[in-house]
Length: 223
Image (cartoon, rainbow, N blue to C red; front, side, top):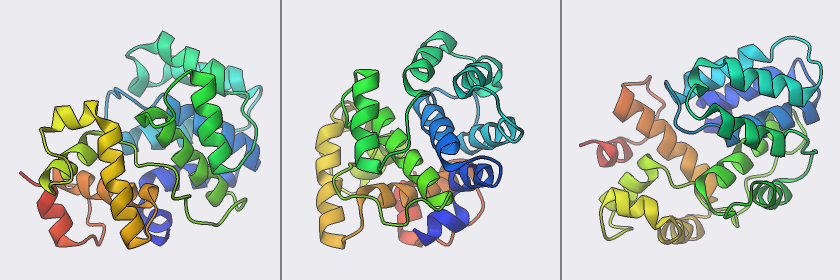
């Protein structure tokens, strides 16, 4: 939890909104943005900082403001209509715990609750709860790791998945099962493991700033 709160730029973006808005508003904004955070035209952390700046003033209707955000964000130019549909399904969500959020997002989107979008939305909703002082517990062990390119790549490099990276992305349930075993043996919930992998990927793939991560982890993600 400490590394997320001190160096994760996504957490910082969400946290800055807690100074300006009530916890439920931040929660609703964050969950909706997480659900449209795919196929971005730019770096993920820049997208989240844009999100934070966009909502840094007083708000009217949250759903209307989210639609305006999706329409104007330079990071969300692809598939705007699909993103708008997701926002409309999620913008009315109410404050709840992370497990309830995980189930609710899956139901509203009609998606597999272990899919990357649903799990990531639950993670970012948890960030909003923590940043705004509503909840201080670790993430639940039940929620799996969201399987994106970095997670798939590391899974293959570690031998947790037998096959290539693209196959790992398709068979994300197998990858999640392998990481759940790692989480169980280390007593570190999968969503916290995900943060370490995400930060390491930023350093290796984009030459980001040092995040005081183990050198061995960075080498595994490197070519």
